[in-house]
Length: 292
Image (cartoon, rainbow, N blue to C red; front, side, top):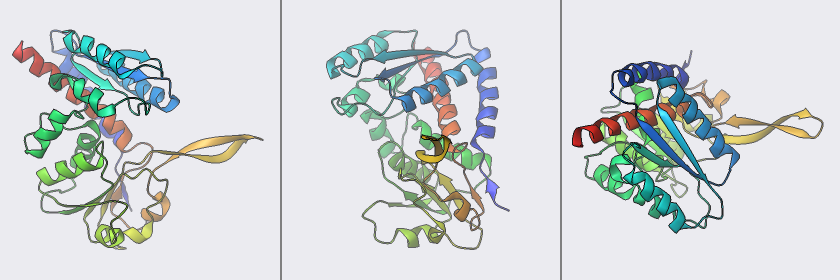
């Protein structure tokens, strides 16, 4: 029987540990979330972060800016948060409108407060093998594998997708942990063969159910992590109201018959990303307190 890599279970255990750790601190860490516009999916993700913060007694400040805001106005807000000593972590909720320079805004966050780890200074440190912290999704993936005692060192890993947010940092983290990593993208000719030859396969391409059983050996030895979160139409709730359901990049039902373990969507990497973000925040808080 396939092992389900249950991110909710791991998240809840991390929450207990973080709440205990934060309870012993003289003050609680504080996270500031900057959102541009009112994208429903972004707002839902932010609500998940707020709920997790409440659970572990962390303060979360949510700043919403109008979709018409300029880059200079967002930079001004980030500058204020950088100077605010009561704020220990800052994230910009992605995606941003095309009118804004995403990387410029991410780079404006003080590295000590960049708990998403997406600024250029963090990227450079990871490239040197000396990360200040790992982006939350990459950290969450590795912690999910660790919780279920999935060996990484010496294993072959395939990273399907090379985005700056997920694919690239996850591949870097797997390499640092001793895996032999091959990154595949839309121009890779032999992705299926690479995936079939790998012990660990991480999928982050953003296309619902694109990866089917043919990408995996039929020997129930591979471990698969599905990072995709895709909203697709399901059966109608009412006559003309389609129900939206969440699926991953994997054809879950087909793949589960072939592999040893895989993460579900929802309930796999998503909860781990939230938990890892607050682990990053707590570590950033401790470093700031030590240097003050």
